[in-house]
Amino acid sequence: MLLKSGLIFAPLLLGMVTLAIAGPLHAQCKVEWYFGIPCEELYKALVSQINKWATATSCATGGQKCLYKLQSANVHFISAKHTTPVAKYVDDLTFRLTSYDLHHHCHVSAMSVSETWYVILDHGTNYCNLYNLMEGSGLTNVPGYKEVTSDFMCTQRSSANCTVY
Image (tube, rainbow, N blue to C red; front, side, top):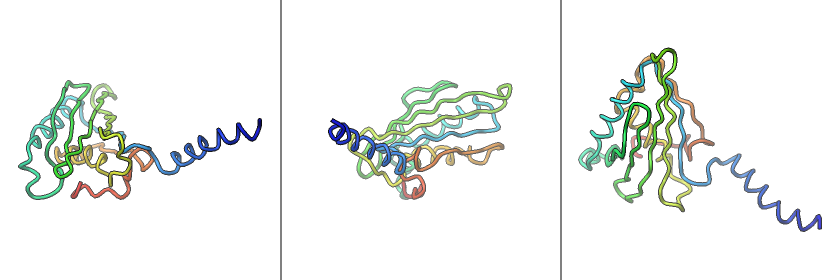
């Protein structure tokens, strides 16, 4: 009986250990950002950048700073999609904006998830989907900018090259 339960739980334990070491088992990224500006300003900048990079034209010089599509947006929540220009993979993006410090600062909880169920490694693409929008809109230069993420929260974050992806 003990041997049977060991055979059942060993693969589960191995999977949990692998997850703890390697990160997500599906290509995705979660990032927490903090900004010293109101969420209203951040919301406008992000929506503007998503719309600016909606066509394939901005991909002409290389990289993936293109083919974003706004799904829905309000000052508290933004939903978008990003399609990779070559392979045409689609990733779902969400940004949850929360005001703090008497509405003078904004916390953003962002997520990018590959729609393709079998994608495990993505070379940091899901991280770059989010970061490129922040950088392109100039939000990485605002006062109080702080990013919190890791390889555990973002597939292959430490090897991401956002000039390519």
